[in-house]
Image (cartoon, rainbow, N blue to C red):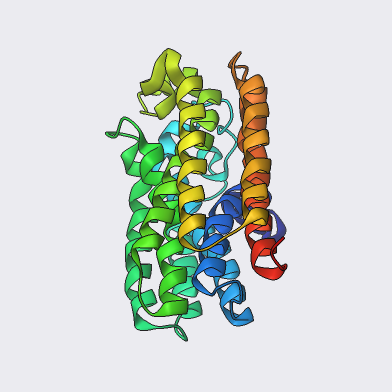
Length: 290
């Protein structure tokens, strides 16, 4: 029987509060969208709502993911100690926790435009259905990119009360980025995933995995450059893209030998890719043009 502190610790680990990388990878595209939609002047309340909403929805998403994968995780080296896999948390507890987190996320956006409410239902469906895509999609990372990037149209809807075409193009950039960083993540678990029959981009791409990561990175940067041009962005934004490109080039040197630790390191480093792009974007709006 777990004590209260042990149970809270298990919930914390189930929600990945001790591993914020997923929240950050979801947060940066949302912040890109908020800054572009608001012309660099987002309302502080919107920033707070979307930052907290990102944390809550990511937490709900990983709880659902672990519930769906609870019978697989015990057979994967990296995931065998997760609370659902070890039995610290029951399946019923996980579902209740996910439901509470999703409800809190919805309550958070009640002050916003009704279009945001409607889009939040799509976001919830994406988060809940993503774990199942690893059973039948050859590149579930693309679906993850939609799920992780759905804060983009929601941010535009909150700011503009509509979702312009530019928002959907920005979502495509996020899909390309997610394919890149999550393929690196999948390269860590490739051997285990092959044994248990889960589909990932690392398996689908095979010996072209590194090339596809770099191609996805290139597509991300190209689309972001186009979005920046449409939004009238200047040298600081492009400096951010250049900084991201230099990190992506460094990532190539780490993943080309397909060593597990280095692939996982690249996955984690993508937080800084998103941060640098955001820093360039924010600076471009805040500083006078050169």
